[in-house]
Length: 280
Image 1: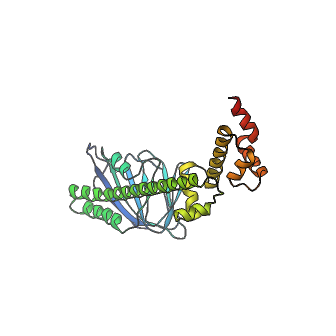
Image 2 (image 1 turned 180 degrees about the vertical axis):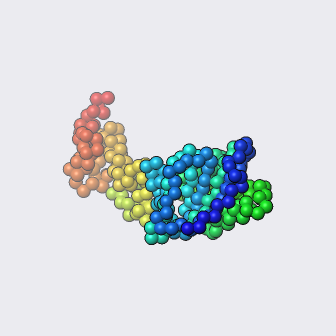
Image 3 (image 1 turned 30 degrees about the vertical axis):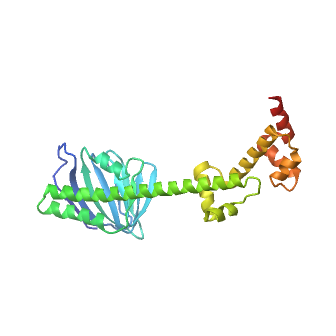
C-alpha cells in the first residue's frame, strides 16, 4: 500500500494563527487495513474517494462509503478500517488554529456530528491534492491556506443550502398543517379520513401523516378524533341538546358508538361529563 503524506513542518509548529495547515495526503488502502488507536493535538478530515470502510470513535461505529467524509478531533482515540471486499481510497488534510472551531461549526461539524457527505463533484479531493502538491513544491502558505478555505467553504456552502432546504420544508409542512386544521374545523361534524385530507391538500396519505407527526407528535386520525371529542364536550357543557342529537350532528351511526368513543377519551360517559359541568 502506498501512502502519500506531505508535511509542511517536521513537527507541529507553535503558531497562534487563525488557520494552520499541517499536512495533507492520500492513499489507496489494502483490504482490512486499519489505522488509529492513537491521539493527536490537531484536527484531521478524511474524505473517501472510492470504496468503503469503518470509522470508530469510542463506542460509535460509522459505516462510510464513497463521497463520505469524517472529522477526527484533537485528543480523540479513533480507528478507521478499510472494507475487506471494497477497500477505500481516502485523502486527508490536517489543520489547527483559532478560527477552526467556527469554520467547523459553520460546516455542521462538531463532536456530535463527525460525518459529512459531498457528491456534487471532485472539488474536495482537488483542494486536498492542491494542498499536497503545493506542500511538496513551493510551500506557499498563502496558496495552501486558500485551498483549505476553499475546501471548508464548499462544506459550509453545502450546510447552508441544507439548512435553507430544511427551513423551506418546515415552512411548507406548517402551511399544509394549518390548511389541514382549517379543513378539519370546517368539517368537524363529519367523519374525516386521512384520504379526505390528502385529496384536499393534494398530497399522499403518507405525506399527511408525516406533516401531522412533525407538527403535533400525533397521527392525523388521533388529532381528528380529539378535535371531534372537544366539539362534543363543548355541546355537552354549553347546550342542553340531547346526547342522541349531538351524536347525530357529529355523524355517528349509533349513539352507543359515540358514547363508547367519548368514554374512551374522557374516562367518563357523556351524561357524567354534562352533570360535572352543570355542577360547576
